[in-house]
Length: 166
Picture 1 (tube, rainbow, N blue to C red):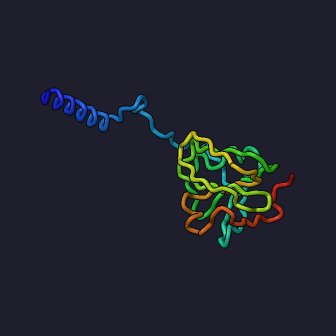
Picture 2: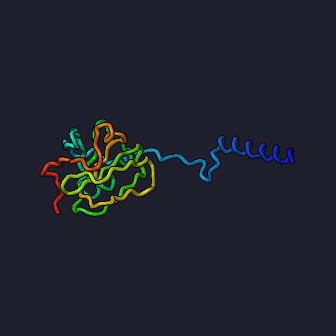
Picture 3: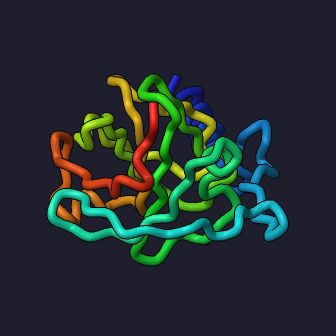
């Protein structure tokens, strides 16, 4: 009996070492896709907005194609973010496929209230939907909201000329 347990443990440990060495996944050759510069969206027009008490320079994605591309295949922004302006307040979903860095996303109502903040993981296929109607979404590098003390309920001041029009 002791010998059987010993050999079972030995086989289990051996498999564990082998799995660690080769990945033990069906897709062990998987690696995140490398960004292709030709696929990246060029930098969009920028504006400064106020998020809570912090000023933030943002690229404004107010066209459907700009919103669809977002930060895909781009480098992590330095000290800025991207403001998504939707034509109508409602339900919106985000996905991180082909985004190379983690992002914090704030859904924002028509009156500028942050209704939800979520952390989105790089290269994730998971959908991140809003739980309350949103007119805007703000993407910033992961940790920015926390560093600025911005929480749900904070106010975002969006200049009148870039506000969504219902």
